[in-house]
Every structure is written in structure tokens, then in C-alpha cells.
Image (cartoon, rainbow, N blue to C red; front, side, top):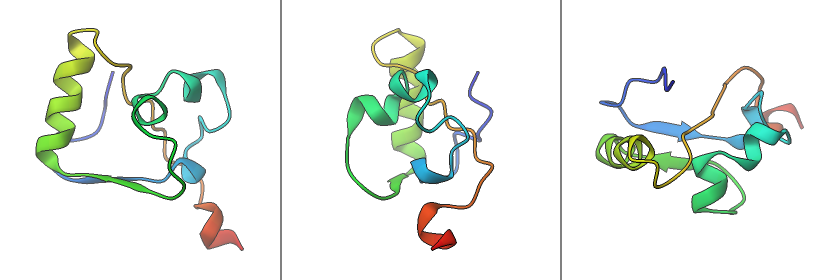
Length: 75
């Protein structure tokens, strides 16, 4: 279940996610949508659209679990 407020924008930095480089990462909507380096910024409307697509089973859910500093912040 997505525990992020869908009415606010969200910066997703995969290097700060506790699920990075795990099986959950392989099944995350961010991995599904893009393989870009660096953070991905989703505005509120984009988050709501992705949540709707995930609810319908059309894309994987966001599996972001923030909990560590981004790699760029740790050197």
C-alpha cells in the first residue's frame, strides 16, 4: 500500500530507498517507467495518475521506502 500523500509532489531518489537493488526494486513503477540516473520528481497529478494505473493493475506500484541518505549526499 502506498503510504505517501498523493496530493503532494514527491522526489524519488532510488539511491535513498531501502528497497534499492532488491527484488522489490525490480517491481517498482519507477524502474518500470524509467532507467534514468538521479531523482525523479512526480507532481501530485502524476502521482495520482500512477496510483490509478497501479490500482488497475496496469503498472507496478511505487515501492519507495525512504530511509537512507542519497548516494550523492554521502560522497
